[in-house]
Length: 378
Image (cartoon, rainbow, N blue to C red; front, top):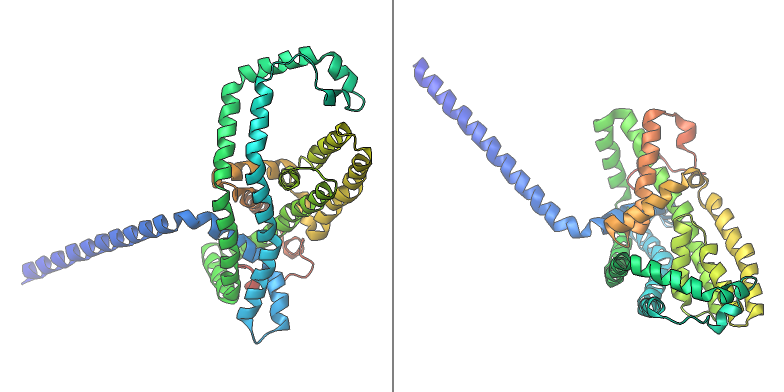
């Protein structure tokens, strides 16, 4: 009898082990299939989470105005996000699509041009036009030698740029899908916030929930201060390019946004525009562009960021620069927005882990932060 009992127990143990292995295989296959299904949408989903977290205070303000219609509040928030993000993105991407072939053709023509006489427009460049004209043959020969030496690299860069331009449609789809998903997340804000607090509370206790709160505030401050100020600079600069009659003003606006986002500065774009206007014998518009760049664009650059989110100004400029370029390579065009946010959150969480802080610093960067249980998941 004991032998039969031991045999039965052994069979049940083997069956139990087999069932566990089979269950683990089924769960693993299901997780892999889920990952493969959602992988194309990861950038859009991550962007939607960033948008939902950033727009949560705005959504809360709208919801307090209409407490009986929470879904309508989420829809209105999504519409505002579309007006702020999707419509400017459409204009900028159209400019990139329209003018990129022209720019590439101009670069190719300049690389193959063998003239030793300076173009007439070069002599009109203020201050240095005469010097450039007198030494044009030397400058042209040196330029051609450098282009010849780095021709393979230049071609690879152009090919990469064309590939990114071809992905503009995907970029617009990810931007729009992110806005729609952000509205869905905001409609389920309380449930998602509660889930995030419970999950990270079980994983890391009070320290885990504090990290979630810190990540939320960092995401908001980075998007508002870094991305928001770059968008504002691009809009005001593109408006000046347009009224000054500068061609490819949409493309120049996109370049201004990128230059502001990577912390290089909008003057990298509008100063050459000033030189171009002088070459075209438009001194009035050149003076206008100088005044606009130094007063309006400079003011937006230096005052919008601390107004939007003061703590974003404390982030290292190199961190933002690497985040933009790394995000562009890793995630495509949508990574221009995601890269700096991801690195900023990682930087702040490491800072919190090394030097844990209590309440005062946790509330820095958001003048009137809502309760943690309402914000942590956006």
